[in-house]
Image 1 (cartoon, rainbow, N blue to C red):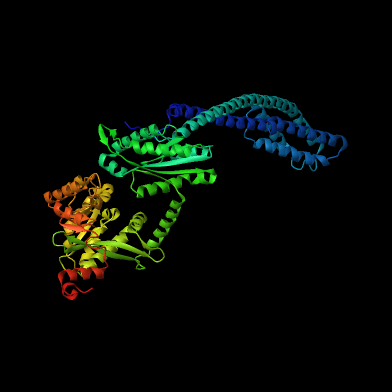
Image 2 (cartoon, rainbow, N blue to C red; image 1 turned 45 degrees about the vertical axis):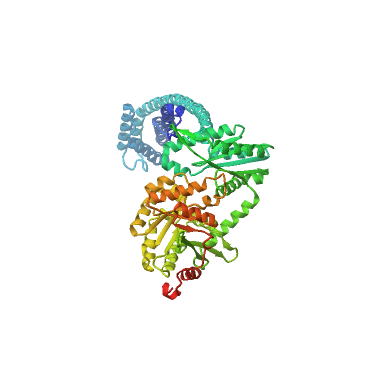
Length: 634
């Protein structure tokens, strides 16, 4: 069973998650409560220390004594000047006391009332023109108030001190509790930081691993390259050939199990590797360090390629797998930073030369990359600049020798690089997304050419994998045959096995739509893939084209190519399919394919690819007619 990565927290962290939250919340609430209480007690202390009953009463007592003193001086010396001032101050103090709403002491309230009554009984104008009798009456009223005022003030002062002391004690407890909470937070934070650091180290190790295979992932591999101390290093990129087709055919679960099995095989083949990683869907990487890194890298590549000759057992089924490897050996910091890119260039070269092998990076591969980049850019305007053109190779009846049709072959004449091989720029067009526009142009030009030929000649056009998965291909074909009034049966759509390997499901609907339109379908390079027979059952083919590699080996006594060609001929007859032999270059090859039942042949024995005018002349020459009698005007 494949274990996949989970989005849940790691086990230890998940177990203590709730306690962590509760403890943190409790400490935070405690700190907030302690802070609020501390502020509250401080406000009480400040209030008790600044303005309170003791202060109010003591000030009132002082003003009473001062007023009593100036009234007595008046009776002795007759000086009445200070009386008015002191009377007004005393009245103001009385009004302040009367306006307070926080007085709770009953005796204090009674004193304030008596004081107001005394002041109210003093005659108007007493302060300005006091009379001796009135002054003596005022002194008699003041005398009973002074003693209660001082007593109440003393008691209020004592109570204020008690309040301050009580709140100070409470504040000490609060500060102590707050210190404990802060200390607990600090200790808890330290523990939490240590725990998180530990978990981060564990997660850092986990995040550098591929959960499917248990190997390092791209991040872990990059870390190994960066942390390597040896000067000489070797990087191998291992790519599983046609893995997408295997994944789609066998299912993703089997594909995952296959990758896990391949990871085990890589580990066995490269036990001395510094690092082995799965860096992509079906791509692995190996790192070798040390002076003998190149020797060990080459040995590992040989062992890996050799190990793939044995089938991989997955779910009690045998799966044949091959891999392609790109390798780069480098030294120094500058080369180290380019190891991965150079290994990727070597992998690209190995794939382009036939897969199932390895190549070591050489500087010329970098030049090839620059050339590909230039071609990719220049290809964008090739149609507009009229740099693309078609050649037409005759497809000949092997019995009569007459031309039955032509295959349209795309060519590119670069203004500076001269002729660019289709094997070079078609792949670039696929990867850059330009193949749809170029393919549409080829189909339109092929139909334009076919419209100028006799009605019994067909035209074959190769369709790429990307075109075959795009339903717009149906519209392109429909518009082209309609624009040039070409019978749909004259248009043959050729596809290769490699096209179907990567896109067989999506291609099926497109091929059936083309078939309904009236076009004929040919399977090119038949016999070079592992799924040819199953394709014959699933897809609506009209023709089989025998791959030219079988004809090239006919003269080899140790080859079974002749038997294979005969078997394909028999298969075509049994399934009512026309068989076309590609690459016919000798009379011996022609005799064999004719004997095998191949009705049509194509190759240099008949003719090389021709321009449109040369193709018209060939047909006219065969038929012994003037072109105007046979061909439609362009």
